[in-house]
Image (tube, rainbow, N blue to C red):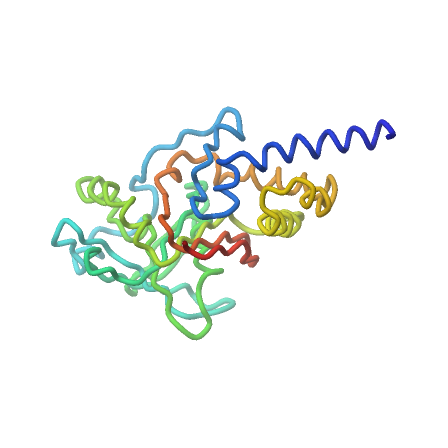
Length: 263
């Protein structure tokens, strides 16, 4: 074996050992996608704080019409249909989690507070961070509504008491969701390669020989590494998300891949 081939084989085996770790398998299978600690992948991880009023500039008056009257109440966001340059239009409703409402919960990273874009929330213009705006733009359907739970808009971020109570409900909110949508951000030059590679890996499971056959080379391994370095994994707050048996979608730009059914 040549030195180059031996080096490549060593790199693959190192990559493989990381892939078959139980916590990595849980991440890739999406049955518990956030069980892997970001600190194990990325040194000097950014330890962000829980949600604050910086999540959006939605005025408190918007939430007065949709009060949270009981301890198990939360708000859901209706994302209205649209496409292209249509404005992003949303509305809020109040639900009781004990009544098992149908909705999807979004898991995402907030992004820079200096980069914002506008949405219409109950007919009022509200600025949200750009990453959330992009997620909403990609998630909305052309011809039907979509019901979502999103912390930045479903919680009155200017009401500390409400915010703290809703944070306490987050485990229940995510576990009761019909689907958990993991938004990793817009697609990049090699993100499709990463998603294809992970999809193939899920198909073969823990079989090293089969996985060795489907190894697509260093470009795909680099793409997976780049995926794991995205800002999403740097955020400690995402560890709050623990879907229990619900379907989870991993989204990257317009790429909807790695869908795994519930047990």
